[in-house]
Every structure is written in structure tokens, then in C-alpha cells.
Length: 105
Image (cartoon, rainbow, N blue to C red; front, side, top):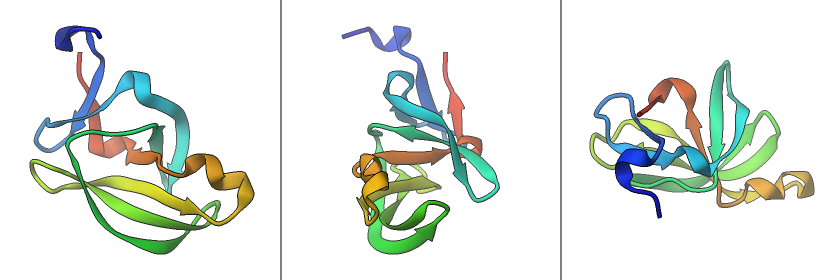
């Protein structure tokens, strides 16, 4: 595994807590309302809110909001379940809103 100083990381914009690795990005063209977002295979140093059904741009999904573990800022959401077959690839993945994270190194 690469050393920490060699990793490209994303951090919470508010407190700089590391929340994701660049290597875990699946897609950089997600939309969150009017904002861009990244789809990650997983995230770290986060807390999950309760899962709930939510109507998103691509249909109904069961999602849980994702919060920074350090400062509790809402950063995005985790896809717990996709009801449409074409959206199943999102299950277990994390969406982080681009304006809520900053790229380190």
C-alpha cells in the first residue's frame, strides 16, 4: 500500500478530515440537484444517518446521508438500495458533493 503522503485524498471542506481516496472514484459526473458530485466505491471517517427512501434524479433510492466524522458536516449520501435494475450498480457506493470536499496533495 502507498504511503499516506503519496495518496491523493479528499477531505471535508470544513475541517480537513480525510474522507475519501482519489483511487476510489468511480464517476466524477454525478449530479446532486444543481451541483456536481463524485461517486466513490467507499469513504472513510464518516457517519451515516438513517436510511430513507428518496426520489433522486435517477429514480427512487434508499439512501443514508453521509456526515464528516470530525465536524458532522453533511457531505453527501450513501446508496443503500436502488429499486430500478439499471441503478443497482450504485448500491453500497457513496456520493460526495464536490463543493463539500477538497482535494489534498
